[in-house]
Image (cartoon, helix red, strand yellow):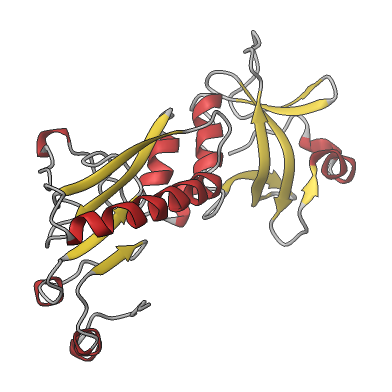
Length: 255
């Protein structure tokens, strides 16, 4: 198993010395150069966590959840010099559960991907698989996730914010800002949910609300329920304990 930081001449030389018949790539964020792709006689194979050509790029699982997709999948493909543009060897559809997070979905897809590999590698060696070209007209790209992507925009719908929470649970998490002691302070939302039934509301966007025994935030459409939060510089707390120490939090407008 190799996980080189740089694909330099020394690294490529080390791989070449192994005389591999096949190279399998999974969750590796670099483009393999042509000289490396040409080493194994049975090519380089990539395990990609989407139904290619949808969600080419480094964050297919997060983007499937962000877009509220109910289905994704695993694609086993031959590698070329493009970004996830190679011919497809096998593809399996996978359902995304309603509240499934990115770490949970990644674990499920990795398990399924390994099972597919075990089945198709012998067939590939026996020349029993005909690679299928991707339809580039149906392609979509996904970006590298940045820390700033976790910032909540409260004018978004509650469902979109909840999907953001599900997608970014592994990293970078989701966060907002509150005004405290005359300063804006970052607050990370470690655990949230949403009301299944939207309430008629005249509250301000981003306003923190008391809803029965729950604490919610008004969004552009619907209510997000806060369960665990962490003010910068402080420990992670459940929302009830947080409100006891900071009662003026209710009624605050999150930024």
